Length: 84
Image 1 (cartoon, helix red, strand yellow):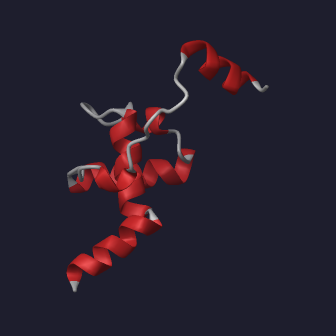
Image 2: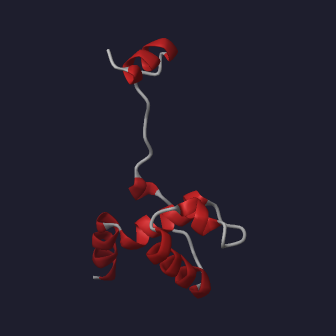
Image 3: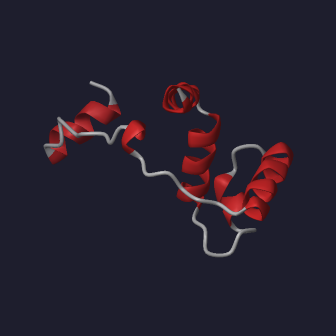
């Protein structure tokens, strides 16, 4: 048995539910924040905590969620459907 299964067996958490990213609420960013996120992503990649450290009041999770919703394939298809 691998470590993950042993840990689940010990804690009894065999059936955890994950939240679907489709249910995420859209995050509004100012143009300046979006621009900074894009520029920082080009420089440091997906180091969300580092990027969030440059934007006051934003958490790494918010930045990552924004990026995924803006650039993720599932969300791009969804935006196309909504525009029809």
